[in-house]
Image (tube, rainbow, N blue to C red):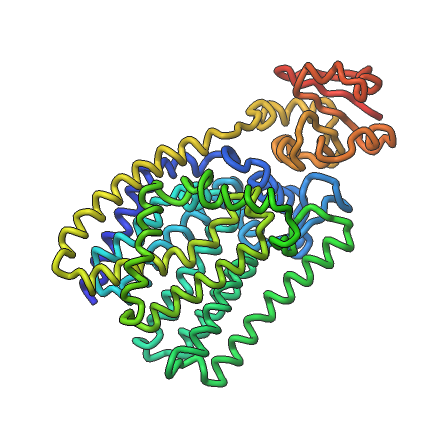
Length: 481
């Protein structure tokens, strides 16, 4: 017990030190920036709407008036709602996501230790996950993908340590509740219910075969069903079509798009998983694993096979989304955790005579991955920039001084995203994403805000640029009615 506590403290210290190396403390105070700024601002915009308009929990909104008053629902907005209660909601949401991420990495350590019974190998498993640019970049971001994965890791850690507890019913209740929460935050994590089903069916003497546990499991499925049913009906009722709450299977795509997505998953975007030689090494380890597959601990083998099968099913059902958004790949890391553990299990059990040399190699590999992760995530942080003038307090003073109150409606151009500039100026309205020509003709907006002088030459806008009421660092404000 004492050694476990020491290992926990050591791991936590290393995680915090590496977090500082990645620049987490400074990033915590940043507005949405970098890769997929579009999706980042959409999430943070929902937080802002909760805060500015004091919305009820079950009536989330965004700033773009694509729907009635901007009403829109997707993932369960629990973390969004909580962060909206703070004076600095961006900091609060990043901090909550970061804490969950680190907790998930600690849980991954205990998942690994349950099978490996080796502190260094378990430490390597956890830290390798913490050197994945995909997880590290989105781990303290505004999307719920990594927090959902982190809660998944915590859930499996609880499940694996149930046999060692005297309070099994309590542990199973926690496990089921965590599975339910992770699916609420990200529906793709439902693959874990498939993994659990395989364990119940094929694992001998599985405790979950008891009727009381099955009953509790069924109860925890109800909130998931209720929320996604409610979200779909809420969006339909308010004519919102942007948020994706369905599947986009592979058979609906052309052969070209199928090939393009495969190329991105396996090649062009593969640098987001780990340092590429590490990913290649993990793939090559399949041959070693296959050689000893019949001699591997059955429970671990079930985890590997089932997580792989359900990850493939997830890829097939959401193939189109994988073509456009690499953060959808975060779901792969359920399988990746169990695969890393399985590979290390093979190394320890069947290559024990050289395990010391293997550990030296793994430590060196880990250091390279951490350095690579820092460099690549720093690059991802600068992929896209937001307009700092729009985000400034001075901009708010300018808008209020010109009569643009919190409840006025604006058209903000140029902006091809639904909410990026609207979130920055903290107003509801429209962007290029909407049919702004029709909105101008129907006089549905009070003001137009133009952030690019070149757009003044656009024929669509010229008739509406007669009443300029102010200019702020090259940003021109026009009154429309």
